[in-house]
Length: 318
Image (cartoon, rainbow, N blue to C red; front, side, top):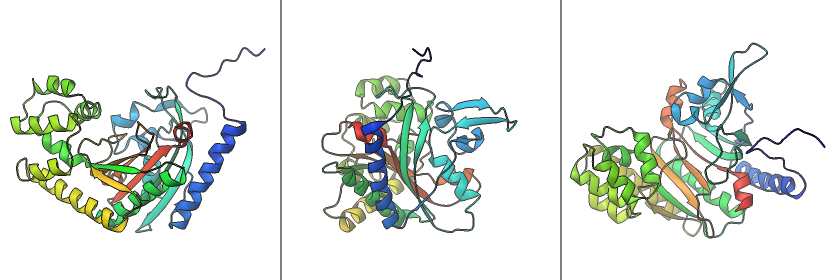
């Protein structure tokens, strides 16, 4: 018997499981191609700076870095494919003003996923670049809902928030945005109260943040707080309300979309609208998406960008 042990958190796929993944992968590919999105296949490894540009420590903590024996210097195994799309669009596809792309491939995390214990994912996603505002958002949100339906999930729901709402509410805080996002994502009023007890944000903002932790930051909460926080909050609130209204009018019957200001992204390179996808029978988010214009600027091409992604392995196991 072989003494070679499997790597913890990594696994092989064969037989029925491999066939199931390929079947769903190709079904989704047909959906994206029919919508006018072209496939892109980035390499498994990148230079670390290409992955971290515009993403900072949010991705570097999950990136496996190694020295290339062929003298290419430090290389990294991708933990996420969106930075690769940003790099490709900013360099090899620089002549295109509007790009609609989709992808599907393996990624590897430096540390096991908290929920699954796995270090490998089969990331599939869609990116729309060059379309600002509601036009690009609606197209991507539609495909996110259609992806869940194609995979067999019932009653897809998209919860939509905005990163500017959170940054407005923590104005004056000594703690970094990353710490606040981790707290809000827990939906734990006790943890949030503990942080706020020693922080310098205003009482009005503290009360608004408590609603996020209690799952009460819906459309009524948003409308009630307009004009009471700051101009950044008001601008994000107006953008979010317009987006939800447009999606409900254009995609009536295809997807339910609800405002939840506590929605946080999987990685903190998103700087605008963010969303998570749920469906009947799923207690965890099936997909994550949002705007990441600042990442494009960090790659040397200042342009609007929005997309979403998900793990095909997790979808098969849900």
